[in-house]
Image 1 (tube, helix red, strand yellow):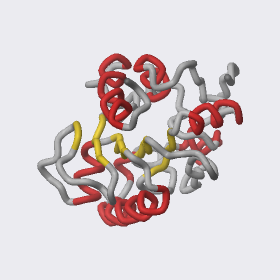
Image 2 (image 1 turned 90 degrees about the horizontal axis):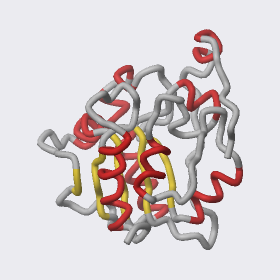
Image 3 (image 1 turned 90 degrees about the vertical axis):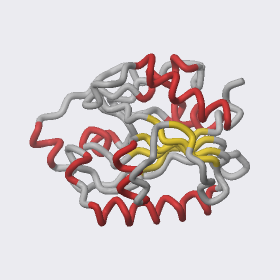
Length: 196
């Protein structure tokens, strides 16, 4: 587990605007059970090359509390190869709807979200996860034109995968806590066979 926390100046972070972070996907011979989908990388994520890496993001603490991970991961300084291997071995992948990094998700255009939705469909067709969990209801609604969508499992399958929309773990989402996120993330993890 990476223990050291990096710090960046605002100017350093701005240097990562529009950068991309590679998907974290299981390797050959490893099943992809659960694909978590972020909206897009934040600047801290781009700077460290690690999904959901901002110190204020509650993604990994929620996964640990839910039992989806059996050990804590602290990615704010960047994720170790051991951490990545742990996620892959659990059948967990991470991607983003939109690839380019911004300071805030509200900087994305409606067209980018729709294009990102199509890219996500292609990723799911290629990787064939059992379950997809999109983290962010507003982004999901905008990407797929499903205005009435609610948090939870969606009625339609998603390229043959079961689909959940779960709350965004960003610290900017003040309506959620690590505990409420853990409960929300446990549902798709159970459906994917990661939790029993």
